[in-house]
Length: 133
Image 1 (cartoon, rainbow, N blue to C red):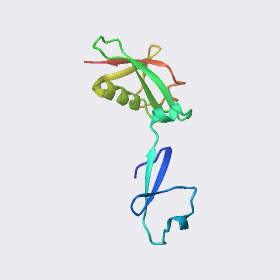
Image 2: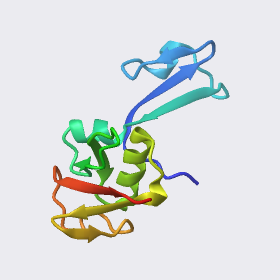
Image 3: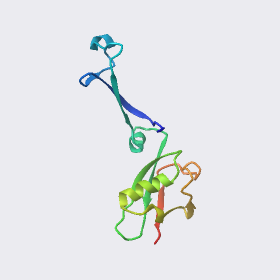
Image 4: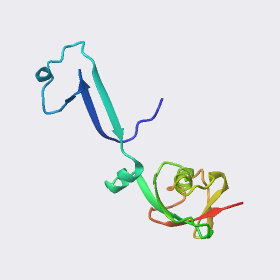
């Protein structure tokens, strides 16, 4: 079963995809008790949550100095997610193999299995990306 995150909106449809708006009553749409109603849910991304002021998500700048044209990238991760999620997002954006990436902050290695809270990170820190091999 997939865990549902924070929902941005839900759209309900009836019949030939008539959008059901919450300001109308069910009988105004002519819905009968056995009619089908379709629902579509859009989940907010971590970046959208952060930008909306959510305290569930932190932003970090992951930066490297490996001189291979990779740039720093802001990544958005949930406080409860392991730092491996930040690495995954960085690697997808920069075309790097995540198995070759380690993180360092203020001279200390960061466990990729630890959450930002477990690493005493507060958000908006610059974290060094070390690409091995």
